[in-house]
Length: 197
Image 1 (cartoon, helix red, strand yellow):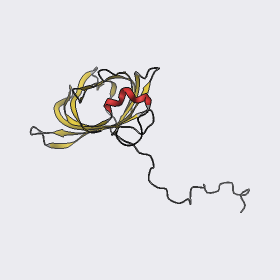
Image 2 (cartoon, one colour; image 1 turned 90 degrees about the horizontal axis):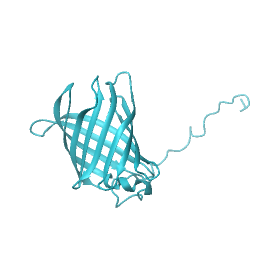
Image 3 (cartoon, helix red, strand yellow; image 1 turned 120 degrees about the vertical axis):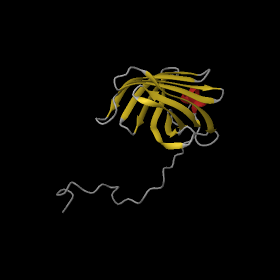
């Protein structure tokens, strides 16, 4: 059968050889890997791996203590990759179970790079689009949700507000959330120490 008779030929990649691993480096350490993109200079203090503890709560749940690791990295392009892993701690600071997970992208916007667009997603079916402001001195980011999307099985979350800052070398943050019929209410706060980067 000719090509004219059978226009649905196999795609050229079907029998192509295997490819090597992803060839581009991503780094949280400014001493190695690609150069930080010039648009990210005001966000430079946040790049790294941060670990510490925090306190969480909400009117619909009991207060809890948690530990957390946040990795903020780049690959030379004008955005940062954000990844957070948390775990619940007992009264003796021992791990009890995994906690929240979140990944996202932070991208400078505006003429002077002092505005920020951020997309944050988690495995419970919630995606938040944040718009915010970046201040260089002292390093500070404040962002509020512009849009929240959720799957049909996700908890009802309607808005969020986040504040990140570098204070005496540590990453401090506070997160407010509007969910399950509550207005914006404090939900999480933590102090994380730079452990790499």
